[in-house]
Image 1 (cartoon, rainbow, N blue to C red):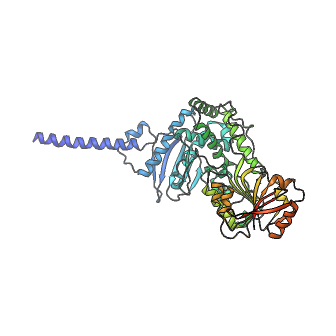
Image 2 (tube, helix red, strand yellow):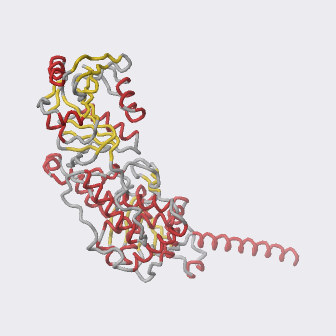
Image 3 (tube, rainbow, N blue to C red):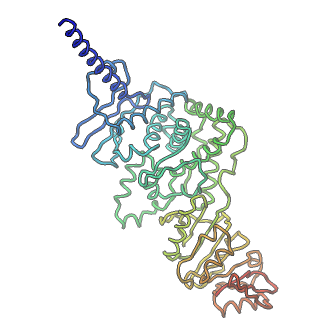
Length: 493
């Protein structure tokens, strides 16, 4: 009897100890270890709050509390705890940490309430976005200069995220696409209006209230508000960060150490990035000015991070576009065609200029000019004619003038970027155009003020240029004039 009693009591004791052990493990697993976030809370649909306590001794002792966290909660807790490595950058631990509240009521909810970041699950589960927001707020508390310069804080938050993850990948909250900033992409994807920036993967938490106000504007107000078609400076922060990161990725180990030593210094020394050195970006009217601004800012950061070489000076971004299509008024169907081409080739710099607006990957026009930037393939388009003054801005030696109105059907743009001019011509047999050799065009003083792509006008132009005969190129289905002036390379009517 006594033996039986001992056996039963021992069994119950073991079960009780296992229960204690499992709960202790569960509580220790569900605590938060982060110098950036002091408290993580989850709000359910009915308003109940589930809290993740800090990993302190008292948390481990309260093993009798049942954990209500699910895998979704724990995944977020692990991502926040992973930011602990940021202390390796020499950050001060004396600043006040942040509190985070994730709510189920609205997946796209966002609000800063004092020191508490309140957000919905769509924002919270977007990889890289939450981490970057928390790092940015933490960095701003490290240095008063960073808190005054939103652009600098944004760039440094990207670099700090790269340091923690050893990769710089952000997730588009709207499409779910993961974007690796170390990949070679067109820099034009960051030339955005405020409207496009608000709906891009690069949106910063600081702009949420501004974006909400902008989205609530009526169409009439939006049409009269000129600032909406201006380039958004903050959208260029991930571009600067990606240029620095790509250069860092191919650097030697000693250079990488210099990079992080420089970043540590920048976070503690207010003079590392001089506020007076930061170039303002106001009233930029040309895309070339945007390129120069980004080159200058990236070089400033590169040198400020401890690099004495001129490796980044002036050559961060390409001086040439891949494709430039210009028109006084681009037909909407043609505009969509070129925009689709740009989106299918994200590594290429493809620009459309229609009237006073520029389009770079979306249907939202920007008030920018393409003057000053050359291109590998430059196409001028018109409805049967092109004015002489439109040719004065051309800096390329060879261009094509397209007649969009008489070119029936859809234009296949893919051969242009894949195999060049001739493939483009062959694959579009119904397209009407004239190919010009610009050095000769500019030297010819009697060039018509308006060039019509019609048989009668081409004959008149041929007389002026001294055409002796024309050769029919069967493969390209074009006429090749031969004469005194070689201004016209070929044409199809």
